[in-house]
Image (cartoon, rainbow, N blue to C red; front, side, top):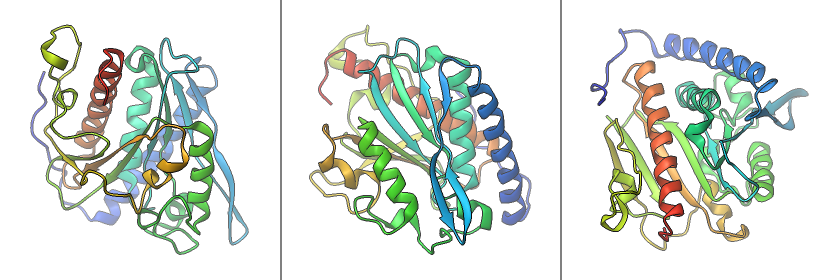
Length: 277
């Protein structure tokens, strides 16, 4: 079923909406932590510790192992909450994780690591910057002075991710937008089309309108997780999923969950058919 166009929340202050989303985010995070205590597919493993002004913070991290996921499974890192005020992206990524955790077959043969808010001090202070004064989206992960990115750098090197996905809210977009490195917007699997004309690829259609764009081929990343690419054994792809700010929170959660599910399913299918992407 194709879902309707974005619905919009009743008029309310952005501060109030952000506070409501923040409360929901922490509630979903607590629920997932409980689920992780008895799920064979979900594990809570926060990163840290991290200290700001003698206050202890950790970066929440959840590892999800889909059905039939083995040690050599494709490892994908998913990141959100670079700004302490971007509760929408963090909450949407947690809802996606919850869907995977409750239906492990959706992540068949995938190893997914979710980092729902990588700026915990900003979340606590309701600020874009970390308490150390850094805007995380503006930094290279390879040599950042921000303690949060140093922690994520070590984790990425240890996990050797095959793919890196950043989810963030962008008030300048009207629909979902996917910024790609490592793929072309014309690649068939991004549109649910079969590879090389085969009808057995098993690709799924995206239920939400999404505009795919790519960075210039050969352009070197200056910010974001892909700045680590040269130091990883296999060069990963990077997807930045931009979520519009105006639609309702429910729409954003459903859109991110569906897009991640379909993107990862189609990516896995493309790999299993031997298509070099």
